[in-house]
Image (cartoon, rainbow, N blue to C red; front, side, top):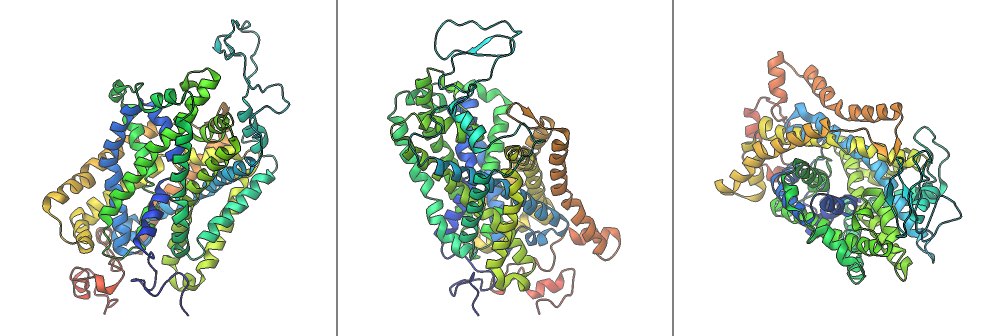
Length: 600
C-alpha cells in the first residue's frame, strides 16, 4: 500500500520530499512572511526614523537573520528530521527541540484565532456601507470626535478646528471611540472588561475559528504533498493584493504625506545613535524570519540531500525583508489619505498590531469609493498571509510525532493532522470568549517573546561550540560540495561570535526591559501574569528536564556521561545510506564510541 504522503519519485521513500523546488521555496516564503510583515514592520520603520531604519534592519538581517536561517535550514536538510530528532547531533540539548515545538504549539493556538478574526472581517465586508463606517446608536462613539481631553484637562486632539477649551480637571472626560474602534470592541469581539470576566463564547468567532481549522486541516491532509499545492496560491496572492492596494493608495489625496512619514523626507538619521532602534531592528529580523520556532528545520527536512540550501536561505530571507518594506507603502499611502480626511498629522492615525489591522486600516478603507471591495481584498490578504504560517506551525507538530513514532503514525497521516487541528480548535475556544483578545495578547506577549531568543542562542551555541562549527561545515559540504576557506570565514565569524553576541545583548535587554503586557488601558490581573510566566516556565523547563533524564540514563561516571551526551549519537547521520559517504559510514561508526551493529 503506497503512502499518501510519499510519491514514487521521492528520493526519501519513507518520509517523502517536496514535489519540486518551487513548492519548498513558496512554503518557506509563506511561512516566513507572516502578519508581522504587514502590521509590525511598517510601524517600527515609522517609529524608528523612517527610511533610516532600513540601515539597522538590513545590517541585522545580514549579521543574525541570514546566518541563523542558513544554520537551521542546513541542519534540517542534512538529517531529514524534525526539530526534536535533529538534536541527535547534541543529545544533551534535545530539550531545546522539544521547547521549540512547545512554542509552536502554543503560538498556533492564537494564530488560528487571528485567522478567524480576518475571516470574520472578510465576511463582514460583504455589505455596503461597511458596518464600521458609521456609529451604531451609542453616545460614546462619534464619526468626527469634536474634543478629547485627557484627565488633567489638557486639550489632546481637536478634530473640528474650533476654539474649544477643556473643562476643569474635576470633570472626567468621556473616551470617544471612532466607529471602527466601536465595531471591533462591541461587535466583533464583544470585549469584556478584562481577563477576569470571561463571558460566553462569541459564536460568530467560534464558527470562524472552526472554518479556519478546517481550511488548515484540509490543506495539510497529505502533509507537504497537499500544502505544497496550496501555497502556490496562499504565498503569492498577498503580493497581488499589496500591489492593488498600493496602486489604489498612491492615487489618493494625502498618500504622499503618509509615505513621507514612512520612508521619505521625514526620515531621521539621528535615530541611528539610539540603541533602541538597533534592538528593534534585530528583534524584528529575528521574529520575521521565524527563526527558533522549528518551522525552518521542519520544512527543510523534506528537501533532497543535495539541494542548494545556501542559495535558498538568501532568496527566502531577502524576499521576506522586501515584503515588509513593500507592504509598508500600501499601508502608509492609505493611512496618509485617512489623516488627510481627518485633518490630523499622520503620526496620530498610525497604529500597530490589531489596532492597525482591525481598526485603523479598515477605518481608512471605509472612506474609499467601492469600499467593500478594498476591504474584502485586505482581509483576504491577511487570511492568506496567516494561513501559510499556520500550515508550517502544524507541520512542525505532526512531523515531530511522525519522526518520533514512524511505525505508529506512518499510514495515519490524515488522522494525525485532523486530530492536531481538532485539539488546536478546542484549545482556541477560550480565545474566542468575550475575554478572548486578552488571552491572545497574553500568549503573544509572553510566549512569542524573548523565549525565542533564548532558544536560538542555545541552538547556535550548541552547533558552533558543542557539536563543532568545523564539523558542521564539513556536513554542509557533503550536501553542497567544497567551498573556499574565505567563504566559510564569514559564516564561522557569524556562528561562533557575531550572531551569539547580538542575541545575548538583545536577550538580556529584552528581559531587563520586560514590562507586563496590558491590552490598551486594561491591566492584567496578577493571576493572568502568573499564568504568562507559567507558560514560559513550561516551555523552558523541557531543556533541563531532558538533559537530566538523559544523564541519568547514560552509562559510566558523571564525566563520561556528560561527554557522551555532548557528542553526536549513533543515529546522527544523513537519513539515506547513499548520502552517508566516508564520514558517516559504518566503518567510522565502529571507530566511534559505540560498537553498535546498528548499521551493519
